[in-house]
Length: 306
Image (cartoon, rainbow, N blue to C red; front, top):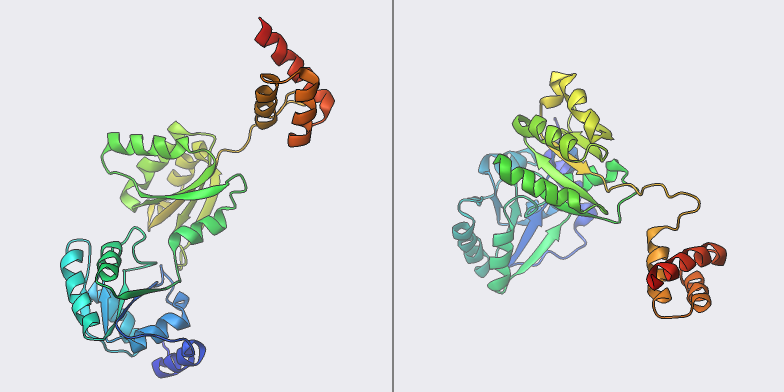
């Protein structure tokens, strides 16, 4: 990508320079997950101000700075040296410097290093300021369109051992009211898809591949159809994957059958009150017509008397 780095930094300063960027502060910088154009102007401005950049991989961090025409000291801070490297960052903060941290892609500390660094910096008495931006988790959730979900959970990468993998995935699937976000590497995606098809064939899954990149693809279908879909094109096995396992869709209720929640409310009231009073209160609480509740309440009373 050919850009005028100086003009880009000027634009970033004009857009984001009005905010204060205090010294002796750690700045967590979210970086693109594939498309360099997703780097925010605020992130660019902060990177231009900091005295050093701590990064998961100095090759990635250095490449990002060169793209912006910036030159900063680099500190390698990854999962194998995070505690030791955190001390280096804290020493710079103690000298009054601004330090940024960026993982290889996306938001630090979300399935990436950064949490240990944040904890250490806060414990040492220094500020940590987040600069929000790209996140493969949020990106995948936004495009999944899971209308059945009441919330979401981040499962991240599942264990690599088959037994542990099955156990953890079963636990993920057991939470039926949430969207569940799972990361997977290309050499294990077929195994994961096959396991999903076995354990939850009717659950919908959104498979996101190479999000924001040139060959991005997004496919949503029932899990039982995904092994065939994956095998139909070898290109579908390439790249980095984010999967959204959708919440379990509510099962249709017969016209004469009460939904589970009104029935639960009615059962609690019938156990403590006369039938007519229980039905009246249940109708007020649930909005279900009294005639439907009366028949169900009568059945509950008879069952309790037996």
